[in-house]
Image (cartoon, rainbow, N blue to C red; front, side, top):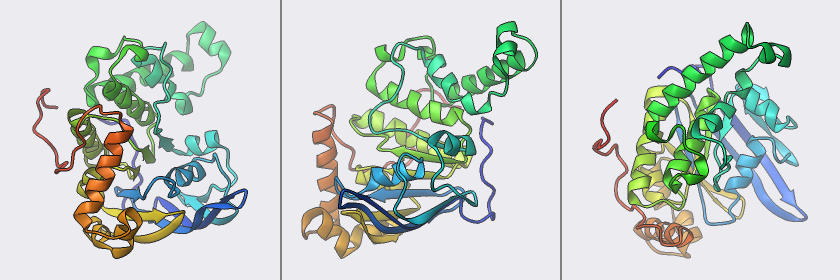
Length: 302
């Protein structure tokens, strides 16, 4: 699959988030948070509910402007940039709650992700000649590759609103991939999923990192998935950074354990967050607490 132009290795950090502060009417949502994301890295952000994880994503994507600090994407300061301008630079995002057009088909929803690659005007589009025809066909080829990559061929012409929840999550991921991102932000990609759906999504995330080499920032409550997939983890609590490091080190850090449980063991941290995720899912299935290494393929190989 060749729909992405990854940031090259050795080019320095893809993302630099430095001493960022964000407040809402006296409530500090982000308090002097700093981290970097390197080419090809899967960087995870964890923390209890209200820790500021999604607020960081909103700063990254231009929804919020921080009061202090800097955010550099591919060497460019993006503080103050509009969301569409940041997206045009190559930053793609998924959301906690599915944000798809339910009455449009899978293909149409994925085509929306190609908007930053469209360069023709309305006259060319009306005539269906020249750049309009060439770029539209190129976009359709890219979309078909994504459909194959995410194994959603059988759903391609169905309205998204008729599809199972886990498949809708894949379609939203596919729309982000259609942008050919230089950085992918995944906001709780397995929230509300059952075990099988979670394992499938974990496999696709691994494929994105290993085959497409797209750096990823992952916000997730499933600690089993985070600890298995992430290269580095940042833990927040009430907007403040507690620690950043390898997953095994973060899981054992006393401040992380205290933030989740007020004390206890690292195993309890994973169990506590998995239970919270299952409660939020409304009993859609048992959360996975085991390994999320690449499972055996049951739907054919690519």
